[in-house]
Amino acid sequence: MFNPLDHRGIPLEQQIRNWRELDVEPIDPEAVDPYTRCRIITMNGIEVEAVMFQHQFARNCPDPEVRRELALVRYVESQQQRAVNWLLPGVSSVLETTLGYEQVAVDLTAWVARHEPDPSLRQAYEFGVLEDFDHLYRYANLYEMIEHRRAEKIVDALTEVMPGRPTAQQHRHPYDDVCAPYDKDAVDPRSKLNALTILSAEQQVMLYYMNVGPQYMEPIARQLYQEISLIEQEHVTHYESLLDPGENWWERLLIHQYNECWLYYSFMEQESDRRIKSLWELHLQMELGHLQQAAGLLRRHDGREPEQIAGAAGVPEPLRFEPNKGFLRHLLATQIDLTKLGEGYVREAHQRFEWMQRQVHGGEQPPSEDVIDRHRERFGGEYRIETDGPHPVESLRERLGAGRG
Image (cartoon, rainbow, N blue to C red; front, top):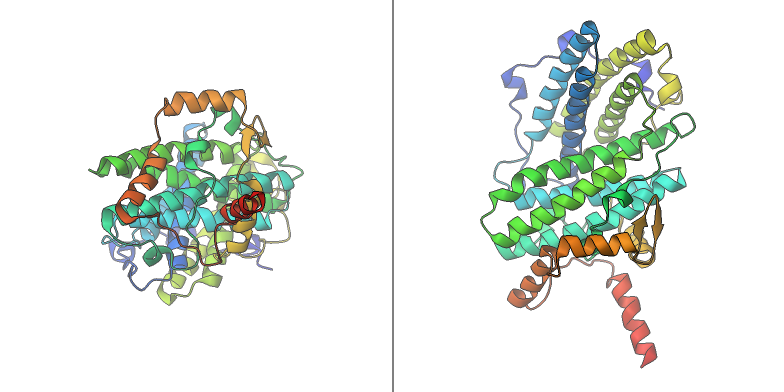
């Protein structure tokens, strides 16, 4: 079992890189393993969260020495973020990168849901993944309409493309996006890592769509990005509410650094591209140094050992990008009709949900439905990738209809 707390890593003062070292060669979009792209997108989101969190920590910290220590590690984290994100090729369009983002959201959240030990947290991930699954389907249809290319060039046959919980039905009252948090003193340490990982990934999706949506000239593209970016904001609320608000800044800093060690270790173990694997290995060694700094701050300012926060057993099993088709089809067949009510989940529309639907849609068809109708008009049908048979919900409906006849 790999325990990051047992390793010193690269000392912080040796981690500043020059321009030549940061000038990484981007991946070849025509030859790359789609899950290599997913790992890059994931770690970009993780590094962005690390930088943003430490900025917030510094703004709330009165100790100038701690602020200086945070400034140093934050600069290194910023270099790491550039090295990771700059692996994405400039020749890829915004929509191609978007498809990668949604593949991350689907297969990352599905893996975490499958391995989450806490039932209430698992349900939160199962609920969210069906919505990202639908976003992938909507963007894939937009991609063929605008760029005249098919999404299998991006996601391969690893992730299916078919309707999930309809995006139009994902606009809920903000009260109902707030979930019950875990108990930091009772929850399995793996759950802390899972929650922070999914929150970071969804936050990066939200930020990306907020910024790239206006870059399109086509009205349907601008409208679809606007709609889905608002859903991603809901998702960030959904996932950030899972964190225990009683965690102090020192605990959160330690978990952030521990989580980065876990993920870089996981991706180093799985990566098929030798050049990218070497970057994951380098960043792991750097993060081990960051973790030692966080552990020292925890001891000095909180009086606790890092094992009391992260556990003494070492990191969980490595997180893996892998197909989740059977799991997702099971969720489609059993949970597609769920919505939120307070901190729970219900199958029937309720007053707040219906009110929000009226406010947001205003009696008009939303962009997420419009894009499918336009695709059908132009191509005679919608775009899908169904590798394991027809959509489970639609297949069931067809069988029930045939039985009634």
